[in-house]
Length: 158
Image (cartoon, rainbow, N blue to C red):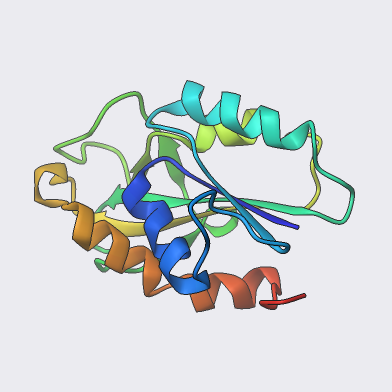
């Protein structure tokens, strides 16, 4: 089973559309969960998933993030290779940050004993959160789903 956790409905909608998931957002291969914004919400949602996972399952956190201008809008960030900072509220000026999100710390804390885990973020803005729309968010995530599948080696229908 692939468990996908997103903070926003617009992030999750990209997976619903791609995999034609039913209203309950799951099929025999994928379970999609919307946690709500913030590290604590992500921690609680992830903890509930982890309690029901088997050893062969994979869990991923996918969402948007703000970034320095050296990152392109729409760029997929694999958190294993990035300097991602989890913040408590939206950042509208970069200061000393390269990449920021609001959920990764909760996901990391809840999955500390899980081997098959990943965090993927998609650059949505250059510290201009007011420019991010629901449709743009959905589109940005949808455009990288195949890339994510290639990294985690998930085959639809496996």
